[in-house]
Image (cartoon, rainbow over all chains, first blue to last red; front, side, top):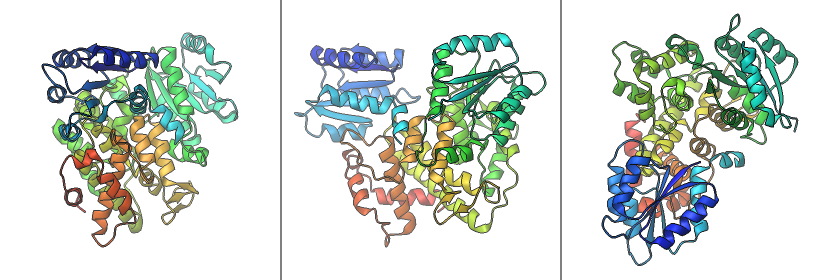
Amino acid sequence: MARILVVDDDPAIRQLLADVLEMEGYEVSLAVDGLAAVQAVTAAGPDFVILDVMMPGLDGFQVLSAIRAQGGEPVPVLMLTAAAEPDSDARAWAQGVDYYLAKPFTPDAVLDLIDQVLTHQVNIRDL
Amino acid sequence: MTRPRALFVDDEPRVLDGLRRSLRSKRGEWDMAFATGGVEAVELLRTEQYDVVVSDMRMPGMDGAELLANVSERHPEVARVVLSGHIEADSVFKVAVAGHRFLSKPSDAESVIGVIEQLLVRTSSSHQREARRIAGGVRSIPTLPEHTEGIIALLAPDASLSYAVQIAMRDVGLTAKLLQLSNSRFFGSRPRNSSVESIVSAMGVPMLQAVVGAGHALQPEPTWSPGIERDLRNAWRHAVATAALLESIASPANRPHAQAAGLLQDVGRLVCLALEGDQIGAVDLATTTVAGVPFRDVGVELLHLWGVPPPIVVAVAQRDTPQRPQASGLGVAAAVRAAHLLIEQAEAGSEDDGGHDDELALLLAHPQLKAQAVNWRQAAEDSCRRAGL
């Protein structure tokens, strides 16, 4: 099953995402800040990264540039931003995220998106 | 629907016993038959209809390559799976064009079942049997006359990795073949390689040359009528231009799949038009069908059979379907559709919008594309120029 890295400094959101993803059978690992996230991507090579923007230390944008600078096949990144951060969506797209959701989001919205990206056999059956 | 039927072929009874045991859980769903050699398998295929044949490569008498070549000609609708141990460098040549899918020995039951189940999935509800019969017989995809020279140069002893990548990224058939083989460990690739560049790098030039040589050897000098050749050349250039434009339209992680889908968007047309003069049935350019089956259905079935990554198959299948991407991202299919429409418009010139102006305007207004501050119509014209349009 696909391995997903969840990066958020907010323990409540981390746990919420981990719970819904694990329930669907995904293998979830957690990073509590940007530095841990960059290290986890280098070491574990996850199949998908969920990345919060506002974090102390390295923020989401800095993590994204560090991940993208690693070379090799880029990992899909979903960026989560708070509505209180104007223009962060434009900035996220310009910096090369693959998917973007503004907070508040429902766990279902995240799950639907990840299912779409990672489980394509379903799509082929629907053709 | 009748029960799916699978035939397993191996000269070692021990291996067949192992398969029989590990596939026990499927006995209620599939009918399974086992043969200890090519000749016995040919006889079984002659008397009964099968959906899938899984064969070893090294067998005394009729070997796996010979058996599967026979199946591709006499029973093209049967999906062909190679299940083999180590493959010697000198037989890569035969193996690369023998099967639709490749499993290495030993494989766990889960992988064998997974591949067979994928091959039982239908991609086209209305033309499934015919689409599979036409697509199933294809072992390699022809190349345009002007690209043959590049392919031959690729076979030279001193061909470089960067030259190989450059040729592969503009060749529809080679890209499809590389994606097909990239799922298998035999050919040096790893499952996470999804761009042509990383597949070629992982494979290495000698392995790539063996694969290219096999495909080249199967293709006679094309003898297409001028009308067909013109049509193929236009479709080919359209594909190359779309793939080039997707370099900037698709997001970083979606780019390898999107560019591959852009290049492979008309693979069905290429395969069907190359059948002109074959006894497969009437090829109709006006309705884009062969024997009543849309070119696109044949292409999608081919990519599915070959195990090309599903996001690519879905994007090719949906190329002519209007897309309504969510704000959370274009994904692969909508990016491919947007690039296709832009290139189509650039080809037609400014006076003709092809009737998709509203849809294209919506796609270009997507935050993912707006954020890049690119003049997409200009970028499409540049891509066309670079593709030689």
